[in-house]
Each structure stands twice: as C-alpha cells, then as structure tokens.
Amino acid sequence: MQQQIQEQINQLPYPLDKILNTANDLLTTGSSGASTSEQIAAAFVLERMEHLPQGWGVIEAWERLELEWQLYVKHLRQEYRHLIKAIEEEAPPF
Image (cartoon, rainbow, N blue to C red; front, top):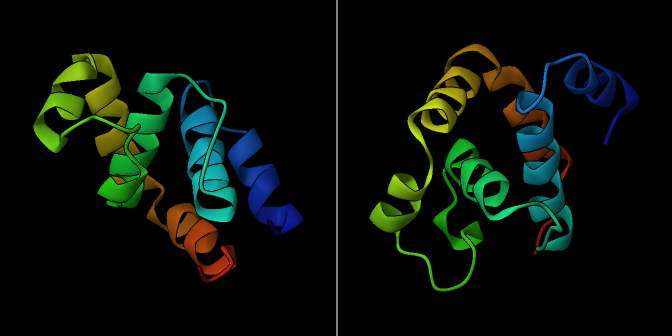
C-alpha cells in the first residue's frame, strides 16, 4: 500500500484504522488474523461479502456487529471513501 495512504489510515482512531487495515489484508492476501467483528466490518466497508468469515450469512454478519460497529462501517463509507477506493486500487487482481 502506498505510504501516504497508510499514513492517513494510521492517523485514524481505533477501530477505524483496524477496519481499513483488515480490509487491505483481505484484498491483498484473501485472509486476515483480525477478530471476527473486524473482518465482518471490513467486508461491509468494501461491500465484498465474499470476505465475510466462512459460514456467516450477510444478515447474520451485520447483526453480529454491535450498533457501535455498524456506525463505524457507515462512517468509513461516508467520510473515508477515498481511502477505501485507494485500498481497492492497490490490491492485486485475483
């Protein structure tokens, strides 16, 4: 990931930074050592349900996130779309 993008992500408070870093891991390697909630949030931020942890349905996964984490997802999609797009553009094609 470009250093400038990573620096912007690192300046975000937890868990926003963790969700975006998890999203990057999921796009670049297809996996992540992040918690279940972090992986689910990252999948929703990316709008890529194939990155939900194995065995989780879309509705079940969304409900697994507490309201606070659902708001983090919405906030990232609204306010940090440029960082999400940058992560997506840097990811290798599979």
